[in-house]
Amino acid sequence: MLYISGARLVGDEQVRIASTKIVGIGPKKAIQVRYRLGISGNIKIKELTKYQIDQIEQIIGQDHVVHWELKRGERADIERLISISCYRGIRHQEFIVSLVSPAK
Image (cartoon, rainbow, N blue to C red; front, side):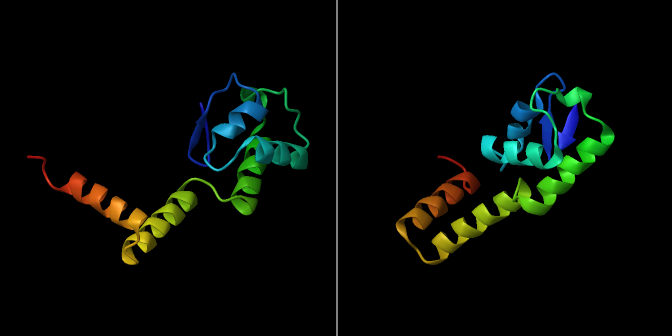
């Protein structure tokens, strides 16, 4: 197993498919990363060298918003909606309260 940006990648999958498992990386961004590094799309994850893996992590970290950064932004958006008391914010607030308080 290989972990890149918090995502567990299976060694038997092709790079073009496995890299889409990273939160925030879709098919288009996966292709862009591969082309920048000159990695074939048909090569499997287990065939990558340590240097190639480090390069993938570096490019994803520099150029793309992934995993915890996305979660942090999402949470900030929800808190903003709650603070302005819009309908979507009220729904989130009620959901959070229902998680905290015990059901009767």
